[in-house]
Length: 283
Ligand code: THG
Image: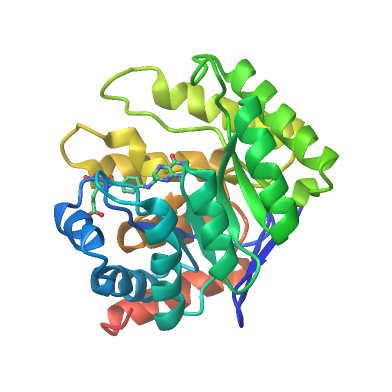
């Protein structure tokens, strides 16, 4: 099961047999007042800086999200995609709940993008899947629908199966669908992480498709989020997620060690290379 996405010049392969692919989360105005303010002024300098710093920190795909109050995403999302393409060659994950914004961004993107996202609602399936087909993109399927995010793992798996089947009916191969079992804050619901982990295990066993997760959502509202995010990341990687959307500055080390412990790093080559770079003060 290989999902291939690419920019003009770089290909990234997401597969359970390969090292974890880190999708950098930081081009996203949620909780970042200065980024939100500069986006409102159509100033892309922060977007460019966040792109460069995340690639330096080990992201091999970048999520690009400009959703904030007072922002016209149809105009801003393609501008942000363009700005990121000017400074880096990593493939991009185009993140918007607005299908018109996704389409405008796909029109300027050079390569095979990852669309973030479609969900189990009819309106979303009917609007977003044709875009994935037309632009030859891969697509993230969120395990939620008209009734919201299910509380039980079985219903999330059923929505995942529906999204994969519907994608295939549009001629999108299942290799090009990444499922997101959805992480919610454990501060709001004590069972939230457990439900997500069980859904991930079942999607891995029953559908076999590649999986992403906006893993940092798990710690919203709690202190020392970095610690919670690191422990949760290790757990979701063991359960089957192989392309998490995370802050690479903290997640890279966790992912490299998880790959080592999960049999995806022969002779510990990647771990040792990473360790040497770190101890030489390079990264
Ligand atoms: N699934 C999919 N896509 C997603 C999400 C998901 N995209 C958006 C989001 N959820 C994942 N991205 C983020 C980005 C930032 C944060 C969490 C998830 C975050 N930001 C800090 C804050 O709000 O306090 C800011 C920290 C910083 O400066 O980086 O926590 O679930 N498919």
